[in-house]
Length: 217
Ligand code: SF4
Image 1 (tube, rainbow, N blue to C red):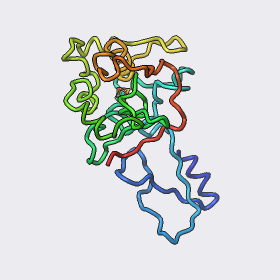
Image 2: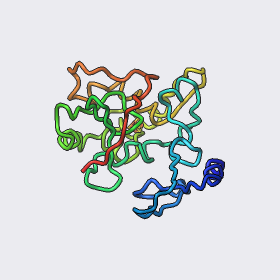
Image 3: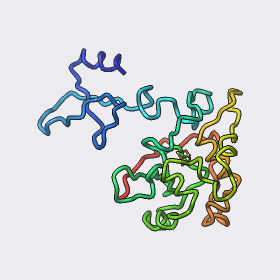
Image 4: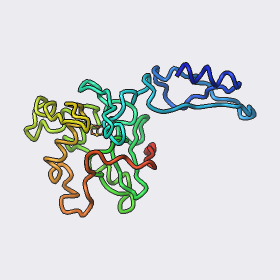
């Protein structure tokens, strides 16, 4: 990132922040340019090593190409873009991910299946319907390892749900445990979709590029 900043400095481009709550790892300026300041500015936002997805999610092309450096201790769920606080609408940091078809997910990484669809229900109603369920409360707490405790899945069982990635590496991460638990318990923890025609996301299918996060009202 320092190289990018040095390159931009050659052109007089000043870095702008992402706004909102600041993560110390952003190491970026937090001040907003004045409205009449015409720049030039730049914002470089991605999977830099010092950002919250620096290890790369075990999803999409990073997964297919064996690029994720995440370990089991890399808890994406408790970071920005993860599932933490997704149920706490009305509070800072509460976000969900919406697909263009209306599918709702608690995180940008995407769970095994969508939680609902805003094409069919109000987002608030979907979230309220999940409140109090142990699996979703665990995600909401940023502690997905606890998803299955009440259903007999110990933390150890969750941790042991490692897989071989497409490059043959043994890979364990809380999101892989989330996939495994959800695959095994899909009809139970997604009871609203037990008889749904909506397909569960298959492993390795890239997140659609149009995925965006929205703060819930
Ligand atoms: S553990 Fe599950 S809910 Fe949490 S970020 Fe990973 S995929 Fe999303």
